[in-house]
Length: 379
Image (cartoon, rainbow, N blue to C red; front, side):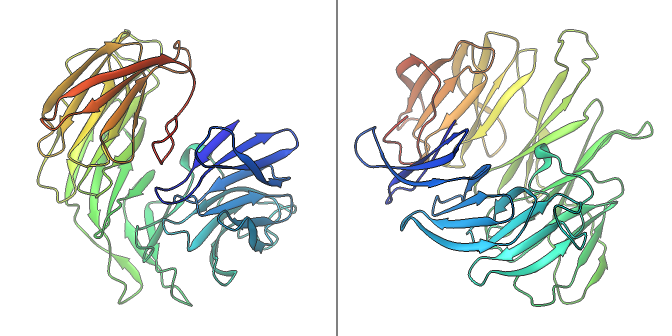
């Protein structure tokens, strides 16, 4: 299995994972890279900028600097099952097994400051679900972190030596997602319970002058039936969020895989709607352009349809056609986009170029299993 990362001005790195561990390859120019490190790790995770690499071992998590190929920090956390870097990679969130072979004091969810190796926060997490990870999230500037507990969302400032908890009461809250951007917002999902519809609520973040419970009216609220799970997709600038809802049962009996929906909410609460999809069937994927001015939705029974919508009023802007697609991948600058069909689909890929007038032109196609690197030089 391979995973690639990199930035515009740095080398691209590829992790190759196998039975004996993981190897780090440095890629420059050609497609054949040089192995620059080998790690006997069960799991590896890159920071979002590719600068740091976390390797999970039996008793420790080792942090490596990929530019120097050197060990930066070793964190003594036995029984680790998952890790996550904060946005600027100043902190590492660690989840351990909640038993004698993991966290000894019972607090199995912890936050570590990587510059000092000091644990700045810890708490108990009863269960671990890969689909819900990370259960502790950071704002883009790393000033605020939050996590969901029973009927509440807890906030704290990781930079404080003795963090004070602020608690937002949301009855039956199931999941939340912090927005990126300078002024973070929180979107929360409450599932359908006791005959009441499920809903999504949008909130401002609290101030931290005092600890304790704070009351806040949501900026926006969207209710719906037949939604058991949601996936939040924020635009990179945090100006709007897409809510991809799904249910295991299709009330119309048209799909064995259940049914899905897609809603749109602006971060200031000024506008929300159901995304106007003109073909019946599931929502396969929705992906924001890195320009933040539009997003693509792949939807409908096969052959699926692909439509570009505006980020302002969620209006259809351009049709990319139909085909065996369930995957969207933008390049980091929002000029090129790939529509593809993986999994139980044959692997067809079509590449588009965004022209100055906003129209998209097909520039190539292939059939393979691959992804686009963050440098856009390779795929």
